[in-house]
Image (cartoon, rainbow, N blue to C red; front, side, top):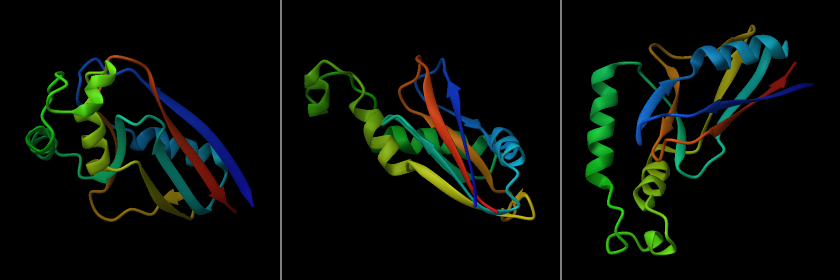
Length: 140
């Protein structure tokens, strides 16, 4: 069995944004030489996410609005007890929990085995500093 590991680094200037990382994952799969297997893609930070969905700007705007309704940004310690530690990102932890930590995609004949319109995204909820995403490919 082959194994390949790569990290991607992002420094998103906005507090919340989504980046299509499908091309980077495809490149890692190609670099790995795996033709049949799996790729794990996970955010290595607790205020970021990796998820699969459509690359449609309206949908992404809907996600941002929905997430802000679920867990509004509020740096005060009254809304989020986490902010009593001196942080201001209690909302970002909640948003990550909703959007998820990772995705696993099958690799078939050397390609990501996606359904129609599926793409892989990095979700940032507390931007303005470098954060990493792990891409781990295993298979034959």
